[in-house]
Image 1: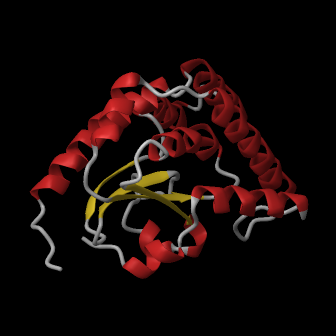
Image 2: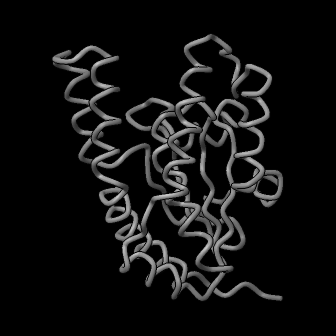
Length: 209
């Protein structure tokens, strides 16, 4: 499966995405059609979390080493929205990784503006985000990760069945987990999937000219 060059070229850089969300919040808005007070509140919280992890988030040495060794162009395309709580916890770490190596082109698109892309990366039939898609230089999909680390995703799905915690209670529990975990679980998972992507990348036929 391939994604078009036009899609990648029109996607946001990390800096442009952050600027977009900041500007929308100044106008009392967020991304997407739902402009309710609760969605805007989620966007404010997400931005605060991104600012926090941009300042204090640390990358694992093994992940830094692997990212630094990538010697062929690769695009990481993230499907996200400004109000997404999980994205607020994870995107700064993805950005920090991408900054280590000029071979990595980090781009971001909004879920609700790109349903044709999102529908290829559903989670149990749901349009869950963020989704990080690994792409070769010519748009070949190498794989994807998301929407959250497997440990907390399994707890999320289990709670959905048991209803042991209300939606609000589980959200608070989940973000406390993120705060304590400091991005470590995500990075370990991404380390494993990145290794697979690199192997696939190296096995692709060399493109002419």
